[in-house]
Length: 100
Image 1 (cartoon, rainbow, N blue to C red):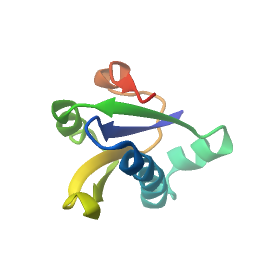
Image 2 (cartoon, rainbow, N blue to C red):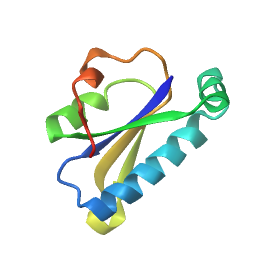
Image 3 (tube, rainbow, N blue to C red):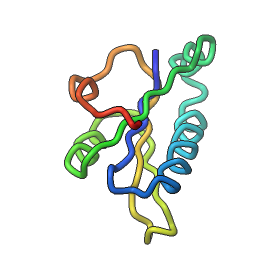
Image 4 (cartoon, rainbow, N blue to C red):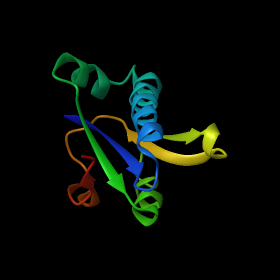
């Protein structure tokens, strides 16, 4: 079971780091009462952070159980999206590039 966090590839590193922290907390707070999050917390609470392009970002937002993160310093631009932890992920998640 893992949580995916997707960050737009053009976001500067400092903002990306903040977005990942906010996304992780935002998804936890939104879904903390769900069985999936309780199960996730009972283990290693894995997170996968990926860089995505604009098209991938927009498509990913269509998948259920997500939290979109905006950045006021970047004119309120959407820069990251986090998903409620789960075991099975839609096929596109297998192809997103890991953030390194």
